[in-house]
Image 1 (cartoon, one colour):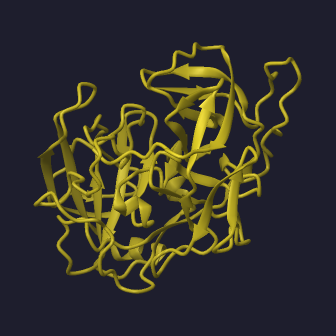
Image 2 (cartoon, rainbow, N blue to C red; image 1 turned 90 degrees about the vertical axis):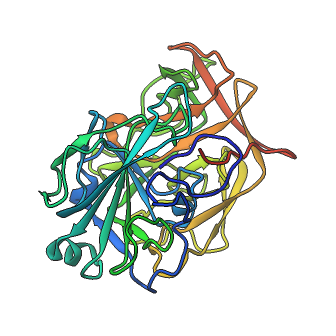
Length: 354
């Protein structure tokens, strides 16, 4: 789930029976659910940290972006319950959201390293399944919905979290840590790109790994992606670490695993475009090795010299890779060349949740 700004910082995520919970409670130690590569490979992109909600800040939820408007199941099991709840009132969004609770099949739990009896919580899909229905990975659960819990720049997606056995599945707090068993290629970038997509509050730059020219006519420095590399790629820090999250408009972000190496040792600084953007920190217990959280430094993001909200980063498949700039007040046109800078700030933008 990716939040819209309203200054709040709770986890009223449309999935808890009383609108409370923070996905950061008393989860069993070392009980990390690791999504197999062939599961996340069914989606265009994914993110664990690109959200202000505590579940994402603590690595205890993942957003999976299908790209075709169909909310396909990332899990196998039996539907226990479906529920609809009200959303924050947004002119661009639906007035209700939906929760699908799935009792996970033992075989799926074994593949993902989840304790038997683990329950999945799926949000932002209009349910076309009913309690008692069996679902397999890839089955259509229903169409995705434009939730009022989203920022306007956020693409439709499937929010996935896991509850330990015997826990209340309608609450968010106490969910299990989530990992992804798939490497993500770090792609370097020189901060330049052309607008290839424009929305009401964002633009997407072709940027890293694509041919093209900078504003001065010279070639971009960012290399093309290695076609023999991992299926997913993410923008790299100056240190070569693939970065995940809202830079830096959410309170914290994270990194992606980059193969067998530990990409960002705890306590190490991360920089982007020559400016320090944060520090790698330890996860809660049961965290994914090699993909730590990041506490953002106070910085601003500039696009052609104008301060914008930030960069919305995730792991994307090669044919969908680009840099999303969140810029509600900017008027960049498709085809326009944009240069992004990151600079220290005394008053950085920080958004709450929807």
